Length: 255
Image 1 (cartoon, rainbow, N blue to C red):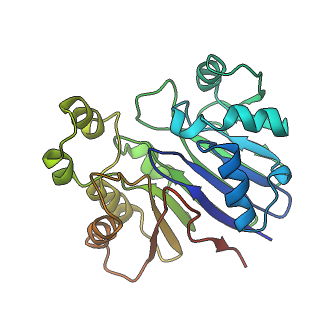
Image 2 (image 1 turned 135 degrees about the horizontal axis):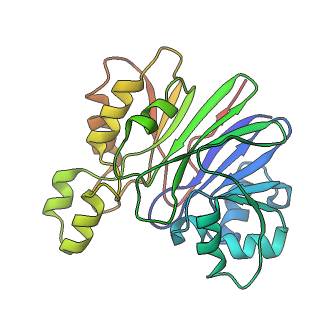
């Protein structure tokens, strides 16, 4: 079976499951091992079947389950050197690291992964494009600003997993402290619904099959607001869904 399923998305934790003909991969491990095991089980996957983990950056909502996964599974962890240095400082167990270079393709079994640089307040954060068989998937969250390079990497994807973190008016009117507002709205923060819609407008093509809106803020966004804002940029019936924070999301099975 070939499939893609977000297991968790948001500030409380992030993890994505990808299965190809020869690989079962996690992108990020920001939920507990217990929750990881439970949510994988809900789609019929035994956690012990996972072959590798790919880490986008070191923030805890992307790595807090990593140490237990490494203890339990002893599988390779792919990340760049700056992210490796950051995560190793907080882990008692030494992961089986496989270091990639940001901007250069690497391969795992039948999957080609390209990590590309993004703007966020961590050591060397990345988004990914993932290619296998005849498919291309783009994964890009925790990005404060869409550069031309990011846009170019995300062109011609069959499926996209994109951040739509907040509604800017809801951020300004929220009770969150100013330091939070300034960070989220900065070029090293998180992508707004409006910016996500602009990005989609710029890279939209006829073969794009589905878009996940990901990493939604619980206080400064809602699924309805995110989808409505993004759709305002699109004059078609593109399939869009929201990646949930606390349960598995819509699973795509590739025919």
